[in-house]
Length: 568
Image (cartoon, rainbow, N blue to C red; front, side, top):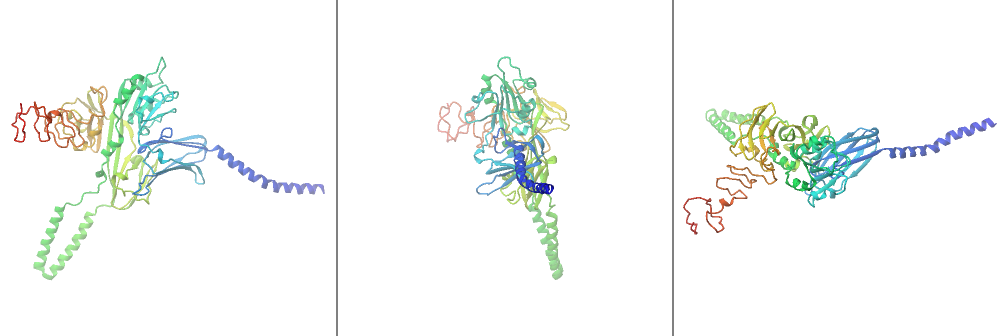
């Protein structure tokens, strides 16, 4: 009897206790799992994003399963409607802490949402408010003292104190104008500072106070007070001279150079048949039809109609071309010292509707610049999707697209060494032109050249780039590749300023972007914005010249009847 009671109570406990404990165990397990999984997503530097620039993205996972990072940006307008862009990246999970780092292009957005998710659930999500949109470049300060270097910049500058290590990818500094290295507690690696300079930033090392030693590798990197590295600068100075030094150093804007490089004609459709060819074909058909009708009568008339039909079909099939996506590429390489920054753009034209996948291994990480080519380049129903492996998008019939590749670093092939130009490549360079010295002869492979004064008329391919390059820049061409050797401190007699936009001693007619021509002996054109005073006034005249005075100082020509005031 007692044994039966014990067995009954045992069976009852075995049935009831699991049912009572199961919800509690499930709740504790879910709470434990939620407590253990940590997700941290940081855009830009310390959360500061530069719109219309390449920005670093950092995702940290702790004890999380394999997941995916999904970014969705609406870059549309009130007039054009929503235009979404997606970025997807796989995140490797596992025990401990794992970090994912990437550099992506973040345009000016209307909406910006992100999420880290698995196939089953969302681990984390959030959004970036539009009020945080700011296209101004950043000025990074690496110092242990809060606000110590704020007075080095203008009052409206975006100055950000960074306390962690900087990334070692040059494209991450696309939106960074200046990096000031002070007495930081966590010094960045020399590779990160070199990447920042080569990517277009000015990296300034402030001399330490007292006998404080520099971090390892800094002496070798900052060997000279001022030197060019890639598209940027490496500088080293005392605290008192830092503000003046930063104010006098020019910065190459990737956006302006890219706009000059990626013109709409890069994605233009193939040329049409010349009208003269159609006129000759029409003349030949009219002559043939006239002869057929004249001598063949009714059979000749049917033959003329048949000839028109066959000729039209043959011409249509011959001129329609292949229905393949046509693409063109242009590349600009900015070199200073041993490193160079590579800017590349690509134009696509599709005669038929197609879904494209541009893999990163072949094309690099691309960003669609559809607003440059056409406001309807990417259909709203087809959302372009970027990932570390490539870009997927859809093109409609007879639609064009411009793509910009993420900036990358490479070894310099064409650069200044002292007063000589070096071609370290295996191919000769043509159309050599130097701002301030004019055209030069071709530069053979693996050779050097000491420049001489030449004709200041640049090749047409360089005209859009010249207003954005400093004086002393050398340009050369290798097919569709344009190489620029930026002037270095040792190779220039003065520090280049941001106002250098003209060519000294130019004898060519300047474009609308040229402001002045130093020492020009030609008659100024109406397109110039500034004209030397000697070209505006009459020699010895004390009055203000009118728009009708066209004489040049020192001219001995006889004044016309319109000149009422006599020359002394």
